[in-house]
Image (cartoon, rainbow, N blue to C red; front, side):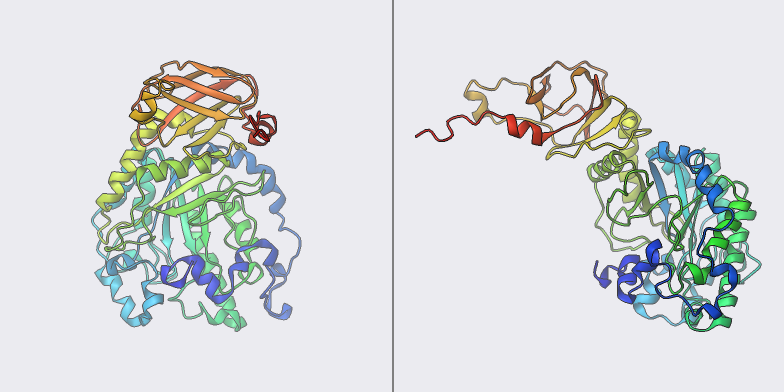
Length: 473
């Protein structure tokens, strides 16, 4: 991405620190060993690290089933309404930016609207920005006055978020940006050991508060580890503290450690088999509220992305950027409610599905659970009146899949439960007698039960396909 897209990744590219997000580069810009405390110099995992790996399957079981979550980017930048990177991109001086803290006056319990929308959208967990890069804390911290209770809001916004999510039966996640544009040591900590010590202690202290004051927390979502490495942040000690306070929590990989799951951003990229992953993505092109960003994704796009993530065994964390008062842009509501209505009927094809090698076709996506696979038909088949006039086509829709290897046993529409006739030979699986109009929107899902794990092997089919008249004059 180019810098004018104001994304986290573009920033990391600009400063050459993208490797800081990868475990393999954790020591690429390490401080001199003499400047790093002994616990930060450890090459081997911290004492709690092996137990974290051992408990991972149990801790992450709910997350693998959930598939779909809501990300919330909300802060002082929302008052500006020009993207969450406004301070950095526009070069706003800190004293001027601090004035926004007095103007930030959200309506009471705005998070209730977020949680109710997430529930309607079929999302199972929520992750809120407790502190973004701007350094403003949404909770009642004892470590800085630059926080919601002591500024314009006059109350603990994290508490409101936690209570709202729990009221709707949703899992609770905290986003926390390690990078901090406001703290006086936030940049010089890279080269000044005294500053690093102060800033790391401050950071660990804030995280300790978040892990202590709100009951059980399900997800800790670190972001942007600039300007320090995992060693400089003392990330192993950081995670050890987190797990001591929250034994059942899951953490991501953006404090320089492997974490429990990987976090591709604005792209869908499955991790290696056996590695959990979650794509985070915006509904338009901005994370924070941007009043003139009208590049809204359609429900069809969201449903397709959700199916693609599920097919790869990953989750989809979809962002909303509330307005300064906490209201949700109406476009976000419209899209998410449409997705939620679709999931009411078709959730079986998303939740609790497993990783598969069923690649998407031109017109459809595929997901799998055991020996059953789901065809997410995004573009309904049809034919022109001219084709029908040839007599070759009759007025019905047919969905054909080449190279389906296992034997199909049954097929039905998830929308209606109606059984669908089908034929199958060594080349093609055909669903027949389908209506000419799509039974569901934005995608029609067909459940197909097979006598083995579904595999679509175009290569095998291609080698066997008869090549009529080849070489015949």
